[in-house]
Image (tube, rainbow, N blue to C red):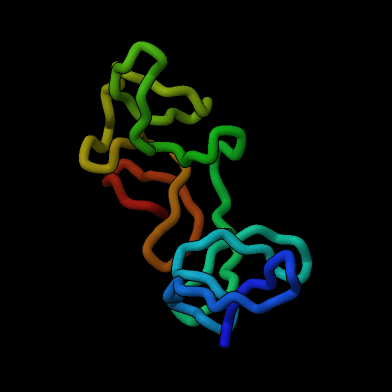
Length: 119
C-alpha cells in the first residue's frame, strides 16, 4: 500500500490515484533524474529529460516561433532573437527568408534556398 508517514510514524494510505503508482507521479509531472537533470514523467513512467536545443536559448525560442512583444503585438522570433512584428518574408508559408537557418525533415541543419527549401 502506498501512503505517507504521519507525525506518529503511522502509514496513512494515499487516496490519490497516480498514472505511475510505483513512483507516486502522474504523466507530465516534473522530475529530476539521477544526474540532476530536470524533465517530466512520460507515459512509460520514466523521467524524460528536455533535450530541446533552441536557436535563442535565453528566451527558449527558435527563429520563426510566434511571439508577443511587451506591447501585445504578435510577431515572430528573428535571427537576432528579437520579436519582429513587421517582417516581409521571402518564404511566407515558412515565415523565413533566403539564407535563414533551418532543419529539414530528416533533422539535417541547413539554410533556406531561393526555392524556399531547406538545403
